[in-house]
Image 1 (cartoon, rainbow, N blue to C red):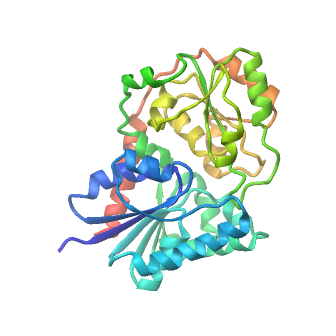
Image 2: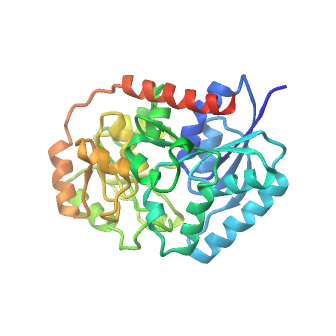
Image 3: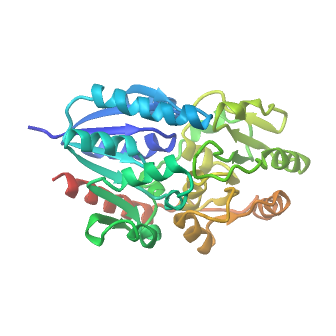
Length: 340
């Protein structure tokens, strides 16, 4: 009898990560997918053929956010059918339900900054729940940080980044070029102010829009939350009206800028010029490592960012995926060995 696998996706980057995993293991296991309505999570999942039922949504207000997560956990615990293993990314809900059901959980993590947010009660509680996962899989870059919280034999380490996993088999789709409003452009995605672990500083998006427009640079703006849609489109600033593979957007762009981490790491792993304006000096270890390697530029100074982008705007890059393919194989082997 095939084992039952439950995969719960709660953030926009999760469909990208789990799509190749599902493709690899669906012939060997029965898979149930559930989703949370946050950002582009549901649209991306459908776009990638990951059909699953949607439970709950995310909120910007902290109290509503907390209550929504609690409510979603209760509903999922009653609704998800039998499973032998849960697999998720940065997801305390699936770990909690797995423990409640006395089933095994596999959790991937790469955000060690969350474990430093002890002053935020709910964030601290989330982080502690995650540590109850039966198997935790992390990148080598944040091994030291997680060793403080887990014993050596309870961590599985891979040498790379989670973004490598789903970039490994990427093949550029030239037809996307016809759907883009510009030929030469930069991508901008804002900060994630509604995450508990992010410093609630003012966004620098208005300054970036102003300065890049002044420099006659085309901007493809990718909204994160509903409030981002309040920024008006102009001749130089465009918001996509339909979902397009984010890796294609990155591949055909000149520079990628984000106030969070995932898209900068995707760009860096693809060999593109990447800028992070993450609102803190307390960076994720994976980001700090890529900055140290010179693959990501980090700053909160709009003028400094614009200067860096202008210097690298016409830089020629080559898509190289050999390293990412090795990382994908390594992560797959870890997950399969845990299930078997």
